[in-house]
Every structure is written in structure tokens, then in C-alpha cells.
Image (tube, rainbow, N blue to C red; front, side, top):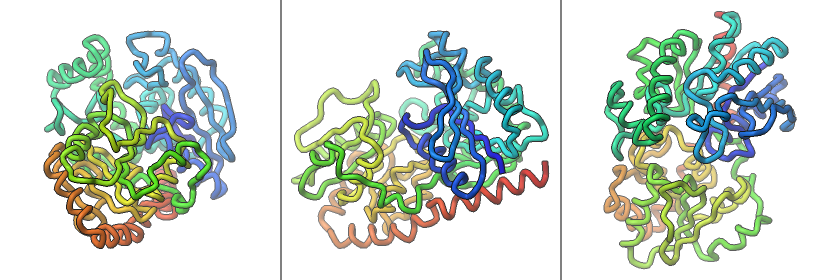
Length: 407
């Protein structure tokens, strides 16, 4: 089977979606499929083609990067919620040359594909976030989970997030493309029940199947002690947070909870800085920015507890699966896809999102009862099997077969 993946970002850019697309592409290539990825070139660079093992990666030049109001403030490739002319033209040429059996999109790159899509090529869309209904992707409104979209509400919210001009363009573009996207996609694949509900897939009568993100079967063995940062980790047992150092991810809630504890273990934070990242961190907190994945896995193997304190409905955080694959128990927010991943009291503890006092209580409970942590970590190992490649890739293979049969 010839597969074409569409993803705005792809490694070396690091993030849950990027790692998922790479793992998925590699997994299908290893199964004898011809797999290509269409992604975006870094701003200012020309289109280029490269090999990532058995996967061919096409980095496409965007027209939008020439428009400052549409470019990502972080200088990263960013697919807009409407067709980008440069990307669309490149995708047309790529599809004509490769003639894929299935096109599998993973984000707003699909919007640049829709104008050039041929009806005889099945189209699958994995929903890694809330981008069908939320121009911010996060489905968070005024610091809490959104109650649902509304045009004027979304305009105000996006303006607060992006600035007035950019927010208006993104909101209008997102609303304008929703109908076309819904009618063009043959199968929607939300990564969690939370994503399916918020994007109103059942309410719209859209074909869909919840299939989570996944980690490689051997992810716990994909670690390296060679990165210098690994040697800087605390020698004693520590608690670990991995993710963007942002308010949406609940870093401020974690810091508040941790600050009120009595003699807690060291806390390690691994992630990229964000505009709202604290400028300073208290003593006993170790911050590492931009570590390679093998170093992150080395940290998970040494951690005694993982913490995922998101205040937004985190769709299906890969870091939670990586912790579980290493037998690490979790304390996480009862929100988004985390409720699909963590069984409260069995593989971890769930607390209300944004509740620093509740988070502190859960952390203190684990600290006071090492036996509980050990039991939850052991229970996480069989639970995570349903979130590994051997399980998830097989399910996606059946979806591909189904859409090609009905095409």
C-alpha cells in the first residue's frame, strides 16, 4: 500500500503529534508499505526531499510564511486553517507523482490538500486536538475547558490568543473550512473520547473511530545515558514532568502544589519554554530544555512518579504512555484524554484540573505510601499495551483497508 501522511511538523521538531506521525510512518514502512510524509519546510527554506529510514519526507515551502501576520510567532512551520497556495501546489504535484492509495492527514495541513484532492483517493484524518471547532486548537476559554464554540465567542478568544488581526483571520478561516472538511474526509480518527465529543463527530453523523496515539512497543528501551543532561539528573528518586513549560500544561499549578509540600523529592521539568514560562524556578526543581527523546526516556526510567497537570483537555498525551511503559505511576488531571489513559487508583491518581490543593494532596499520598506507587506502576505496564504500536497500527491498518474497499 502507498501511504501519504500530511503533517505540518515532523522531526527534528519535537512534540507529541510529530513523534506520533514519525512512529506511525516508520511502523507502516517496516510492514512493507511505501510511506511518504508531506510536511512544511522551515520558514525561508526551499522545498527539499530527504529519507528518514524507509520513509521519504517532503518538506514543502509555504506561501504563508511570507506574510508576517500568518507566520508562527515562535518561528516554527505553521499550517493555517485554510489552503496555503504554495503547499497546495506542491501537494498536487506530489499526489500526481506518487498516486497514494490512502492520504492520512494529522492537522491543518489537510486544509491545503482539500482543493487538490481527487475523489478516488480515500482520505483519513486523525484529530490530535480540537482544531475542527477551535482556532486555538486547545478548546480552552478564559483559563478553563470550553463549553462549546460560538462565532463571536471564538473571535474574541482567538483575538486574545493571537492578536486581533491574526485571530480574526484564523477564526474565519477555520469556520469557512469546516463544512468542506467534514464532507471530504472518509474516516475521522479522534485520539480520545474527549476529542470525539468536543469536535461533535457523533452529533454531525460523521464516520469515526477512536484510536489513541501510541508509543513503540520497545519505547522503554529507547533511552541513552550519553546525553550530558542525563548526568545532571538528581541521584536520588525524583518526580518528573515532561511537556511544554506553559500554563495550559498546568506548570503553574504544579509549582504551586509542590511549593506547599514538606520535604518532597526533587522535581524535574523537561520541556520547551513558552511565552508564559516562569522566569525563575524554586530550589530543588531541575529544568531541562529541548532534550532529545532518548534522554527523555532515560529520565522516565529513573523517575519514581510522573505528573501530567494539564488544565486544558489534553487530547492524548504521549508522555503519559511513555511513563506507563516504564512502569512509572502517574498523577494527572481528570480532563481530556487523560481519563482514557489513567485508571484512577489503579495506574495512577486523577485530580481536578487546575486544583493545586488537590494535586498537592495526591502527591502527598504517593509520597507517604511507596507501596501504592509500586502497585500503580506495575498495573500501568499491562494497561499501556493497548497504546503500543502492535495494537494501534493494526487498528489503523483495518481502517485503511475499509476506506479503500468503499472508495
